[in-house]
Amino acid sequence: MRSKIKQTSSYRFIIPLVTIIGGASIGGMIAYSFLPDEEPDISQARDASTVAEDVSSPEPQSAQAPKAEIQLASLSEEVITEEVTKTVSVGKGDTLMKLLTRSGANTQDSYDAIVALSEKYNPRQLKIGQDVKLSFLKEDRPVANGREETFQLVSVSLKEDVDREVAAIRQDDGFSVKETVIELEKKMARAGGTIENSLFLSAAQSGLPTRVTLELIRIFSFDVDFQREIQAGDKFEVYFERFVDENGTALKEGRILWASLTLSGDEISLYRFKTKDDGFTDYYGPNGQSVRKTLMRTPIDGARLTSRFGKRKHPILGYTKMHRGADFGAPRGTPIMAAGNGVVEMAARNGAYGNYVRIRHTSEYKTAYAHMKGYAKGIRKGARVKQGQIIGYVGTTGRSTGPHLHYEVLKSGRQINPLSVKLPAGRKLKGKMMNAFKSHMKQMNKDIAALPMLNKVASLEEKPQN
Image (cartoon, rainbow, N blue to C red; front, side):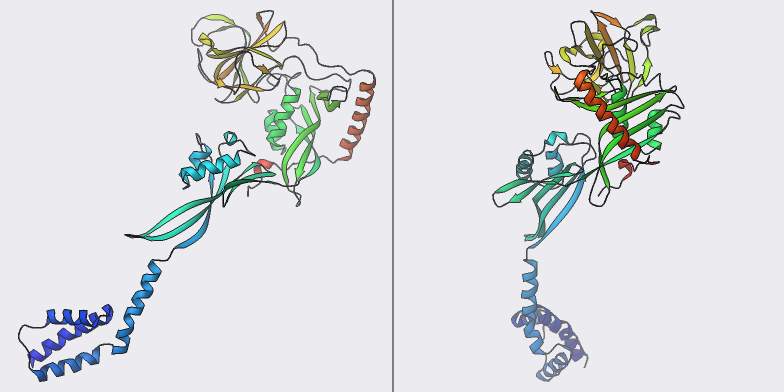
């Protein structure tokens, strides 16, 4: 009796193995290996087989097991494809090639996509924080040790501006470029306020976008020293273009058509006007005098005056010496502009000045820029530059204690105070051109008066990005 129970117990394990593996002959081999060495009598074997048949699956089900195995095998060999999209942001030091390959694109696809994009967009214009949208075809395929995922670049798209998107899209014969432009409607906006601490802070509190504030400063920088002349209680007002989408959402700002500063009770108004005789656009006061001068007083935006022209105790040398320029403190990398039209006389390392640029504007006037981090593209000896053009970036090269711009104005080869120099005036409208300007100014005043002042202009910096 004990021997019968032992054999039956063996078959209880053997039969499920036969069912799972699905091969009768294999099952028989496994059964043989587990049976005891001595041969049982026939009656015991018959009884044991009877018990085994009771606990095992019926034979028809066992015969269907190989079909399940085939179905599982088919599933493991299937290639699964799907489209995957991701958005990545440009980081410091990133190029478009680095961005694509780091995100999973192979080198050849990345190169081909960049070549296609270059027809409509300069990849070197990537900005830190700019979003790039990528689309991949993901394939999940079987390999020797399991499954493997591969990615094929399908498209690369980025916004060059809020209303313009450029994309490289995979075709049968490579990548092609597609440009999408959103039609925007031009609206006018009028905003302003009273300066409490600084123009920048008050403008931001009124909701005036930073881009418009910077343009306002640039327009008035020929006549106004924003470091010394702005006081609490002064006022500003701006009439400018805005571009909105079909839902009325403002996407970007355009040109300033009129602006006003009231400093210590005196109002300065400037109107944008294009003279038809030469096709040149400038800002003019009510008397028809162009605001543009031969030189700008401050060739850098948003900087603070840290050292004036005159004698001072040198911060490094430790003794009193003549400081023959004006220093403007600003973060490293802040753009520096040419103070006027001219020709670059020097763009090289210059002793204690560090990286240095000198521009000849007229036979009498020159300007110099020192301690620069580096030079803008194309700035070299003999290059022609225009007023407001970026020539370099704030740094701390040479004999310098921190990032700043040392700015000099030279008259007949001698350094003079750049903050007090009397600069030659720009164009003065006369005759028919003055009459045309007066008509333009009259219509502009009507348009400005008809537009309600906005207490707060929606700032684009605060608008959520899609």
